[in-house]
Image 1: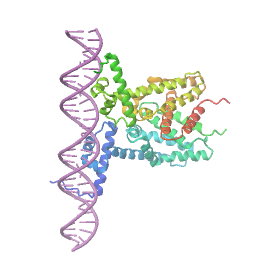
Image 2: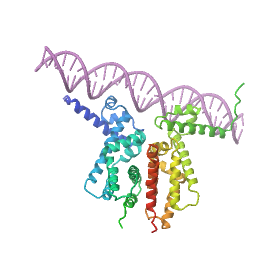
Image 3: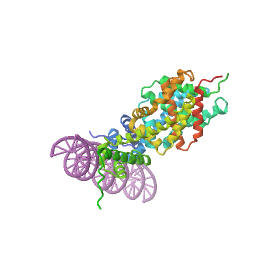
Image 4: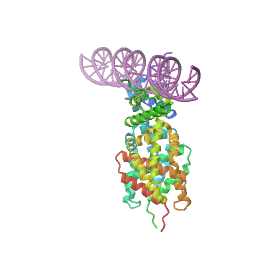
Length: 199
Length: 199
DNA sequence: TCTTGCATGCATGCAGCCTGTATGTTATTC
DNA sequence: GAATAACATACAGGCTGCATGCATGCAAGA
């Protein structure tokens, strides 16, 4: 009984090992952290050797970037799904925020995207990753709302950055045990106050 | 001509080496990063040996914690100075924000306090450090303002956390080249809107 | 279709570096 | 002068990145 050689094509092999490495790395980077996870441990969990790792990724940091990129894409997809329905700008913002909180509640996402991500890859790179996956949506929505006169005229880029910052910190605080409802209330109040009150 | 042995007391020696280590470490942690700075490099810059380092600090992370603590204290002191004058709550918030931006403009503070700090020490530890150095001021001010009926009644802790998050992200964005004025405008608008408008 | 040359995927071993500790030595302090 | 603190040095273990070597898949021509 010899193990039948799987006879996989090169494409299949590459895809399989890359996926195994990304999955194993994600698990370990979350359980411990980027710094405290060694490549020997990762490849052991993935069932490959370090040679395979360094064949597919330039270095440990590139592997981490792959993990972060996938995670950012998943979060963006959940938000897009929640804001796809034709809602008012305000409702869209609130729905997007809730979807963001739900997405960030997945184990490890705060560490990957909000702690280790910025420190390891730099805020610049991480911003680019975010922008690549529908991070534009927020800014464009705000710009449209301001253009339409629904919102106070404020610098769009700064406003988008600040709303994003609030959501990020709320996700961290919630994971640390803070009241999700309280943070939702505060952010909702800020959003509410930015819209021009039609008296 | 022999170098006269300085005949320093133990207290002086300890203080001098600790200061030299903290200063050298700060410089290098800022130029490069925590992860990419090795202890051999630090002790060389400080003019001591690794033995001295591990005598005064439990490990590299403890040394980093010392650097961060000093930096947080310096920032808190600048903010306290700016908000010492008896101002209205709103004016105090705005002055504190400006003082925070000015303090965070010092080279390396964003990296130490906002990037490497949370990743290396954990957000929990960093929060404790912040709270230890007048981080309470903000929350207490907000609570008083709400109590006095000047501000919308919102969860105090969450509100303080969110205002802090906005300031932090603004500091990062400004260092990355964003318009300081735009971010100041946005945060000021949010603060303004939180106060009950006396019509 | 077969085979032959090449590229791709991967395994292994090595060199260099870094961290933390243990042990030894010198300078203070009591 | 004994004990303790401050430091120096040496060592063990581990990790990263690379270079080399091998085997398999692939492509092109006879």
